[in-house]
Amino acid sequence: MKLYIKRDTSDLLARFSVLDEQCKEKYLVLGSRSPSGEKLVITDTQGEKLLKIKKIPLPVLHAFSIGNKEENFKLIVNLSAKSSTCYYYGISWRIRGDISTGSYDIIDADGTVVASHIKRFSAC
Image 1 (cartoon, rainbow, N blue to C red):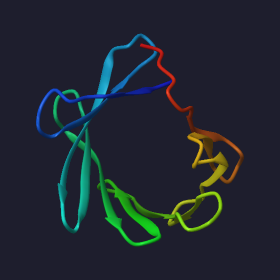
Image 2: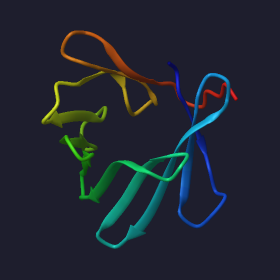
Image 3: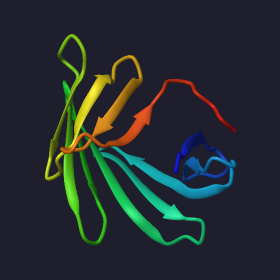
Image 4: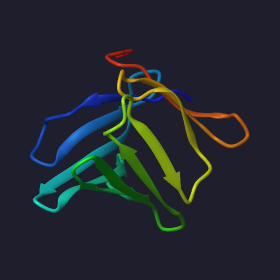
C-alpha cells in the first residue's frame, strides 16, 4: 500500500495527514515544539496513538527517538557531512539515495523498500 503525506495546518497541533492511494485519510501526525525539541504523535483516524517521535536538535546532528508500545529505535542524522548521513540504531534499516536532495528510499536488511521519499510529489 502506498501512503502519501500532506501538510496539515487545520489546528494548532496538526502537522500532516497521511493518505492512501485513493486520497482517503489513514493517519494524522500531531506535534508540539519546545526549546528542548519537537514531539510528534502519529494516530489513526479514531485518535489512537500508534507511534511517538521525539526530535532533539543538536549543533550538527538531529537525534530522533521513534517508538510504539512494542519497539523503539533511534535515528541520527549527521548534517555536517557534504551530503547528510543517517544512522539507525535498534533497527536494520539503511538509506539509499540522498536525503539532502529529498529523494531517497529506506531499505531493510533483506533489501525490501520500507519507504520512498520523493520531494514535492503529490498524488492527491
